Length: 108
Image 1 (cartoon, rainbow, N blue to C red):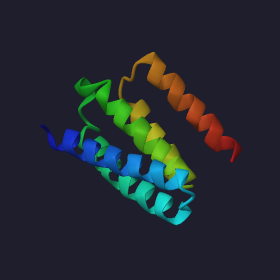
Image 2: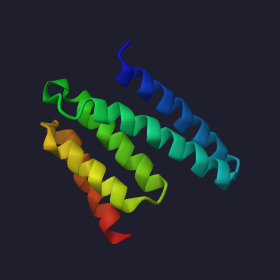
Image 3: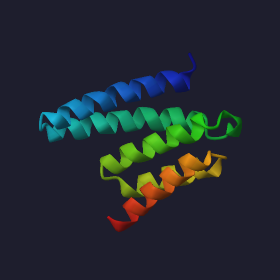
Image 4: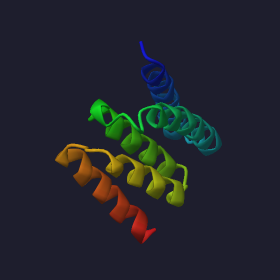
């Protein structure tokens, strides 16, 4: 398993724990776990930043990190992660999801 894959799995475990905390109404723990997931997912994504041949995995990781940043209220960071995703050659479906997230951020 690559370092990027391992980090992604760790990020998703934290994101799942965050979701459960949110369902229980534990906002503080939700934010803490979401930020921890964001750190891991960003690290996984940046490991693939220059590896355009790693698409669509590369852009999917950046999209996931952007959503986590958005969920933490870090709008500027989410924008930067969206931009990093678009530097590559993501599939049209991912491009559309990134554009949708950007529009959502723009209204906040």
